[in-house]
Length: 288
Image 1 (cartoon, helix red, strand yellow):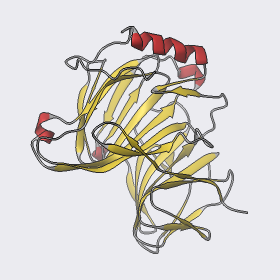
Image 2 (cartoon, one colour):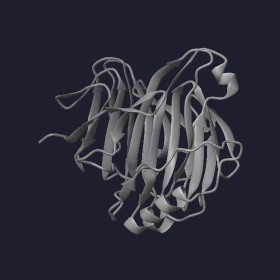
Image 3 (cartoon, one colour):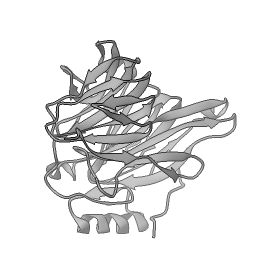
Image 4 (tube, helix red, strand yellow):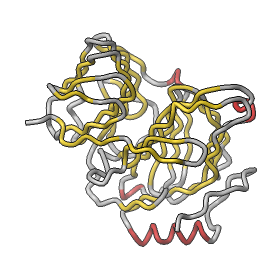
């Protein structure tokens, strides 16, 4: 019996000015634990004067998690936050009942040639927390657990795994780990979570006798004892968590257990009821 229940490919999406690889949601698998969205950004190369501009847009019912491997960007939101994120930091934004934010390159970043490379994920909030007050928390790289197992360099982005817990505030049991595996090393996938997956950023690994290709996400069978073997130097993330029992509806940037709530969010965005990002008057229109 295969340890992999499904392998999700990365599909290219144009976000206007740069392209990302979309992994979640997928037609056959919407969530892995609470993770309902995963985009692989870049590596995108910008010359001086160019920049990334994700205009103000809204969210409800989720938390956004931004983690960069290279480069930087400027987060601004309707709470008044203005925070630069650099490689290795974590930006965790809890949308709850509603928030608006933008992600752009700062003037200083635009003044030089640079590369932006990272992951943008969304974590669906448990039903009882869907309408919490919005929050934003920044966690510098130096505050995140960094450790090694069998020659594998690990960094805990959020949650609990391998006996470590990240300082990031979460709302349901989850793990999100970056791993750099030299060729020939092995790593056991945490067994304590019902839903688990890896996303291979670069290199090649094997799970049992199955080869995992770059920019794919194998989702592991529940309860399976999974060992990853690096057949070349490899860079990957492991993620997952407890199953969320209720169905999640997703439309654009909105996630909810209620279709009616999503319809209300659509109206609220079209009619300007969401709070605005100070100093950033542009916006992304509601898709029709």
